[in-house]
Every structure is written in structure tokens, then in C-alpha cells.
Amino acid sequence: MNKRHMKPPRSFHLTSLAALLASVALSGCSFIPTYERPAAPVAAAFAPGLTTAATGEGTGLAAADLEWQAFFTDARLKRLIALSLQNNRDLRVAVLAIEQTRAQLQVRRADELPTLNAGITGTRGPASSGAITSTYSAGLSVTAYELDFFGRVRALSQAAQAQLLGSEEARKTVQISLIASVANTYLSLLANDELLRVAREALATRQESLRLTQLKFDNDAASKLDLSQAQSLLEGAKVALAQSTRQRAQDENALVLLLGQPLPADLPDGLPLGSQTLMPDVPAGVPSELLTRRPDIRQAEQVLLANNANIGAARAAFFPRITLTGSAGVVSNDLDTLFSNGTTAWTFVPQLLLPIFDYGRNQANLESAKLARDIAVAQYEKAIQTGFREVADALAGRATLGEQLRAQNAQLAAEQSRMQLIDLRFKHGASNAFDVLDAQRSLFATQQAAVQVQVQQAQNLVTLYKVLGGGWKQ
Figure (spheres, rainbow, N blue to C red):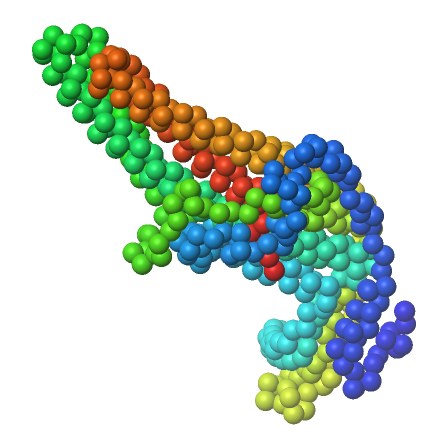
């Protein structure tokens, strides 16, 4: 290009040049591979008989469309969940991570446009005549703006956009898990309270049994075996009481951590374990719906999209990089007259860099980007498989725990009746102390099992709500 054709008029504006260069860059190409969502490596449907609740066809809203305030009915639990959403540190970190990735995206987007700088410079040095000369300049400049003909900068921007979307999905995943963790820990606390009540009742009963057995043993009406059995059952009740007390304290500590603060003193009254009413008819749908309902799967796909875009940036690195540096302003030998009587000056420096010998650096970067994409594909598929397994497990629990609890309660009723009859026979001399102690042991074990199945059923419904994407609603 001839220099005389490059000289612009005095009204030359660098911003106009920047706009022209940006429009040229936007017409460039892209080397990002065409994205195709990997096929879900799971069955097309869940096991027959598990997709609906045992009580019917499950006509309720999908879990992802059901707000947690509607799923949970216990006022105390609702208050605890609300506090955790305000104060939990993991959720706070997830929210801050979104802002961090948003800032990183802004950096990438800024690379797509020229950066305009204003500056004033001054130099002093010897001239060819030996005298000291001064030169001052002021103006606007664009430094090393890359014309994105091959889409390298845009590919990096698209990768940053996918990372931002992925961080937003990660935040949703944290909230869903937090809500489920608070609910399940709270239910565990209620179960511990019930187990403590059962253990205290058993302890009082066994203390009385030991007193009577000791009295009979002292009067040669009971054997040493009867006395040892009564002592053993009493110590067993003490063991159970200590275990339940310790577990309750640990669950309360876990709840405090989830809340991010100590338990408030003004919490509303809660419901006992047996009165917890969760919605059992949340429909499971089909496995393909997990791809759009579960934020952890959507996050894995955004990671895949980001790595797919990085391949485009790595491919573009094999092609020339064209950068432009330009400036326009005024120059003068006297600082006092720089702005009043300075001479218009401008520079325009295009540069083309073509990689020739890089010792395999670009090829290695491309291979690394492809391998990162393949890893992301495997992680995306694993996320789908994990989600499928979690939903299938929760559905299996919903289908069986209800019947297990019914049978457990029936067994408990039978043991209570048996205890009453044996106690009555013992008072009339028709049964010995061993029969009474055996009935007490069996009743206590059945009471504990009933509480454990009851809390398992409630926690399984919470888990089903979570794994179906419940707990987050825009």
C-alpha cells in the first residue's frame, strides 16, 4: 500500500477506524466443531411400577415445578430452610462464583472490541547536531487489536459464556442439595427425639423389672439367670439412650452448620415425625426429562460446550493472527503549545504473525482441547447415569417403604399386644420372668425399627423431590 494513499484528512477519527475494523472482524469464520448432544446412556424408561406413587397415578406437579414451600408443610422446617438459604456458606460461595465467571466473561467480550486509550508522552534526547531536543505528543491509541478472522477470540468468549451458564446451574444444584440436607437432618432430629422417648420408656420399664427380679431373687423366687437377663436388658436400654442422645447432638450440630448460624430461639412449633405430610405423588416422568430438569446435568453440558468452544480457539491458533496498532493526536516540541499549536500526527501499524515453527505447541494445545472435550463428554454421560440411578433408587424406596412401614407398624401392634398378655399372665403366675424380659426386649427392638422405617420413608420422599430437580423454581 502506498503511503500517500494512507494519509487521512485532519478530521480523521480513530473511533471510526475502530468501528470499521470491528465490522470486518465480525465477518470472520469459526472453527468451533458443530455441537451434537451425546445420546443419554440410560434406559428409555424407569422400571415398570415405579414411576407413580403407590397411592395412585401421581397427578401432582413435576418436582422441578413444585416450590419447596409447597412440598414441605412443617412451619418449623420451612423457617429452617429459609434461614439456610440466607446464611449457608456453600450457597454463598456458589453465588459469588457466578459473579466471578460473569466478570471473566466480560473480559473475554472486551477482547472482541478495540481498546481505546488516551495518553500524553514526552521524550528528551540529543539530536544529530548535539543539542538536546524535546518532543511531546498527546492523542488516542489502539494497541494490538486482533482482527478475529478465524474466530479465536469469539471462541474464547463462547467458552466463557458457557462457563457462566454452568456456574449458574451449579448454584441451583447447591440450593437443591441444601434444601434436601436441611429437611433430612431435621427429620433425623425428629426421629432421634422419638427414639429417645422410646429409650426412656424402656429404661423405666426395665428398671422396674430389675427391681422386681432382684426382690424375687433375694427371696429365692427367681434364678440367677433371670437376674442377669434383667440386668443385661437394663444396660441395653442405657446404651440405646446414650446412642440416641449422641446422635441427636450430632444431627443438631449438622443442622447448625447447614443453617450457617445457631438455631434461633423463636422458631415456630414443628410437627412430630408421624405427622409429617410430604407429597408422595410427585411424578417421575421419563429419564430424558432429567436432562432439562436437573441443574447438575445442565451444568455438565455447559462444561462440555465450553470445551467444545476451546477446540475452535485451538484450531484458530494454526492460522495467521492479524493485529492492528494505531494512534492519532498532536505532537509538538514545546509542551506549552502542544494543544494550541501542535502538529497533527497519526500512525497505523498492521501486523500479521503466521506460526511456522512452534515445536508442536499449537498441535499439543489442540490435542489437549480435544481430550478435554472427550473428558467433558464422559462426565456429562456420567452425570446422566448418576441422575438415573438416584431417581431409580428413590422410586424403589417410594414403592416399598410404604408397605414396609405398614408391616412394621403391624408387627409393633402385635408385640405390644404380646407384651400386655405376657405381663398379665406373669401377674397371675402363668408366665415366668424370662418370658416378660424377652417380650420387653422384642418390643423395644420393634419400636426402634418402626421409628427408623418411618424416618426412612420421609427422607426418601425428600430425596426423590431433590433428585427430580425439586427445590429450585425460577
